[in-house]
Image (cartoon, rainbow, N blue to C red; front, side, top):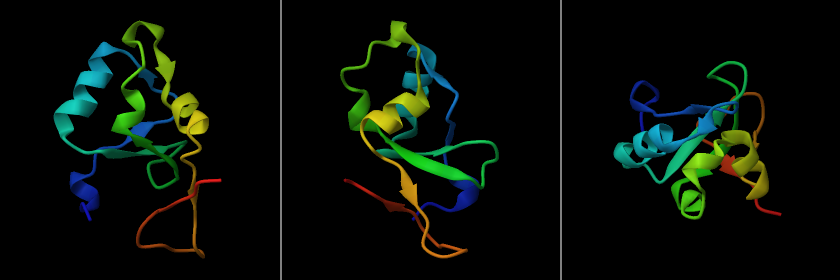
Length: 88
């Protein structure tokens, strides 16, 4: 698991343009946590493979991709050490 201080995460409202897509690919991570209002509030996980058919010119919000692929996070109890990604 990647330590929090080395973790690369995105805000749900960020737009996936060519600059942000390049930054995601340069990190080398296949999964990127997505947070909502504060970084401790992880709402989903963006999979790098989900970006393959995305057009950078569309500037799609990160939350749209997370929702489309149903990559929301379900918390286990009040505190959790990791993330549980649900698929329905």
